[in-house]
Amino acid sequence: MRPGTSRRTLAASAVGAALVLSGCGDGSAPAQDGAVRIGFVNGAHTDFHTCLQGAVELAAEKEGVKLFTANSRQDAGRELTNIGEMTAWNVDALIVQSVDIDALPGDIARARKDGVPVFLTSVVPDDTSDILGAVVVDLEQAGRLDADWVGKDADGRRAEVGIIAGAPGAASDLLVSGFTSALPANAEVVATRPGMFDPVTARAVAKSMVREHPGLDYAFVANEEMALAARSSFDAAGARGVRIVTVNGTDKGLAAIKQGTLSATVTNSPLVNGTMAVRNTLALLAGKQADRIDSVPLVLVTKGNLDQAPQYCP
Image (tube, rainbow, N blue to C red; front, side, top):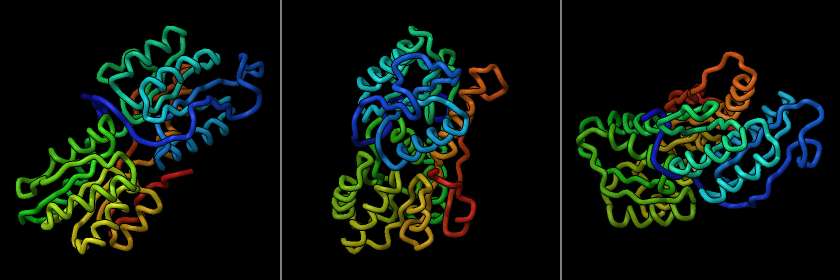
């Protein structure tokens, strides 16, 4: 299994599935100005996805790319439809932040049928022979880094750990599997529940979790939006001592680390991811030197090394 690989789904929310052209023209015919045409199919509308799209748009603008965007709203069927519509718009390549890695073979086959190469962000299937390239995030490693922090902080003491996952599937499954595999024997996972990458859901999950497990010492939460919501529930229940570790590295998350609201986060910068995706796609299309499967650097951030966190959003 490659870094960033899994078996199912990425993350959450809504806005519309209509394709959008970023730039001039209506997108109904091939560009007449020689500009490279790239389609970006995003997976959801969390902070991560919004920042990833902003990074792709900014990089495309800097490179003179004519960009088309669509959002699959955490629906694998919609993702396939978006890819089909994108190929009909005569794009030169597709960048895809997938909703469901199990659906990728069909997505890639659909694009290849129309001669359109696919570049993936965040995750890749085991077999990468049919894609143009990818920028991956080693999500299992992100989970392991958080677990390492818990192990060091617990320092051999018995500890109860709760997990608030995201939506079942690729990103969440990888994070959780990495986290649980790296926990020391003295740290016992007493509860694992999906927060669906939704703060409201995460708040309710945290409330129920701490009520059922009043001795909870740590919580691993699959993103900072949910982590901050969980913090409010823990605090309201009088469980201010629960230490929360999470993932993302947003400005809000880093501020919470500084304040002690959250204990640790692992950075996963969509600005870096999206910028690398556009640059590597263009290089590979042109036959220039670029890593086909590239990686986004990860940093475990605590109060002691906040200055090492990369910029999260454009």
